[in-house]
Image (tube, rainbow over all chains, first blue to last red; front, side):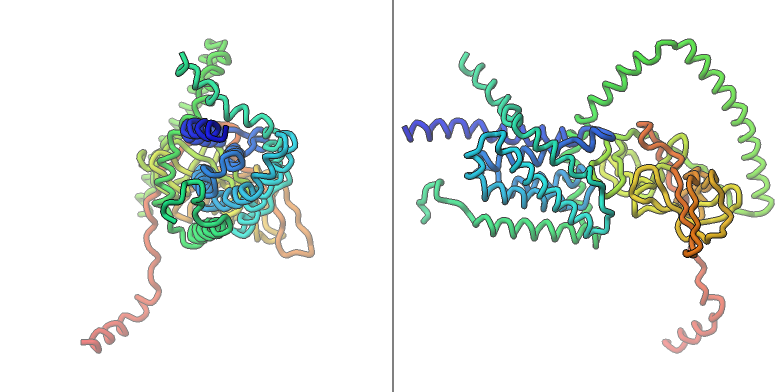
Length: 173
Length: 300
């Protein structure tokens, strides 16, 4: 039983590394969409969500180094201080890696508030570093992104796994 | 230990990794904010994510084209309107040409320096970064199109901002509403010179350190004064929208609204850089020519 499980895991994980890259790329793409006004405020941080998803479900593959790299990419894309998102994502991934066993016990809906807190921690770090660099305090609506990310969390696994499910079919045929 | 299966290999502990990455990112942030020393790494990453930025813009571009098809239902009216506009503009342009010639002649007579003509590059706003701490937009023209940092960006109504960072195919514009951005301006009505600074909020600028009794009125137009050598003179920047003078303070609180609408249009113009201003004369040269000579002789 254990042997079968592990071999299945191996096959899946071999496929997965490509999907991890794909999902992270898609998240980055969504973060770079040209939005304005309320849509921009409400847009969840897709990269943070996907990094969280993988570091909770695949902690051996996606950890702080991936989070750090994605943070650097976001820093350039967002024209923010170089290293700001990198620090926020690394700390967020650290907490997720610490708690991933506990988090996986809960159902998706019960995970959502806890994930919301993780997203909030990342935003707080971005806020702190921004304030240290001499920026003004942004309005409360800055934190709307965490709330919308929390609401999106229960749907995320279905979205991330979507290409994964379709893939085996052409191979079987 | 070497034969340990993959399962047992963990590498450094979680906390050690956190400390490593935290220190690394703090180091990057300090270098970026204090020393401005990381353009190469930024450039490399920018090239790497450039295809994604372009791809993310595709839906907006398609939407623009498709909505353009449906909006222009009355092309005949549109053409008539544009013809009228063209005629009016041409009348003004002819006057402008005459004035320009006259101005050049007068400047020649006065032996004053000629005003520089500026060329423009049309650029499109790719996206607005989601960064609550700064007001920036990303344009689709970069160093490959001859864009340099420091160039001024305008739209049809006035100054939008200034290019602060250039990537091969993209550039970052810091808007005039950014907290760290100031534009030297002049009041059209009274000729008063000052600086207008961003507040970090959309649609508000501030005229700081103007005396409470300064000659300024509601609705006054501020244009660039051109004494900085970066902004060409005479571009509209803002309209004075609110004046609060309190006897307790030496300065009036003057709020302005920017003339350009950054949120309204997608296309902007990048002005070519002005010729460099002549260097400031050194004060000591004229007063102490003999001292220098003596010094040189002494060294010999």
